[in-house]
Image 1: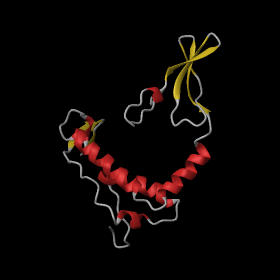
Image 2: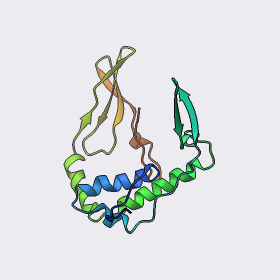
Image 3: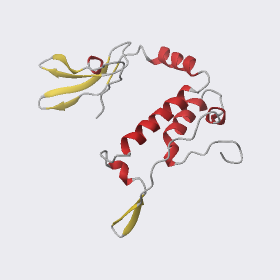
Image 4: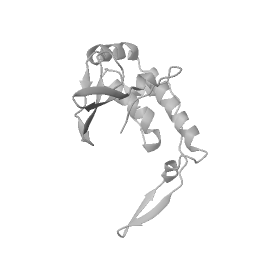
Length: 163
């Protein structure tokens, strides 16, 4: 906290703090009211690596995070995700805000611009009322689903397409 009672968010605390700020800022609540009841986000190990590119030295204190096999990587990510979840869940009025956002956007169908490849068109489409987009291919005038993330969900997990 700084002198004004607002929580300062640095790179190591970005996820939880920024997520809380983004949702709370538009709701009329002060970020400090939410942050005051939460523990600090998990601290990431700092292990500076310096490289020189075109004569300019660049130091990255978090390069170790690029190695997913580092034994501290997954526990840190899980702890950060848990902190972010707790931060979001602590926002006053969050359930009502989520319900309103869902009412405004959840029933709208949407599709991405098609991408041509190999004589076919590929695009993502979210059907009305669904939470995720499925990957489609159009070939010879007909569309078919290639991947539907909702078919891959197991045990309440969330699955979505990216890249």
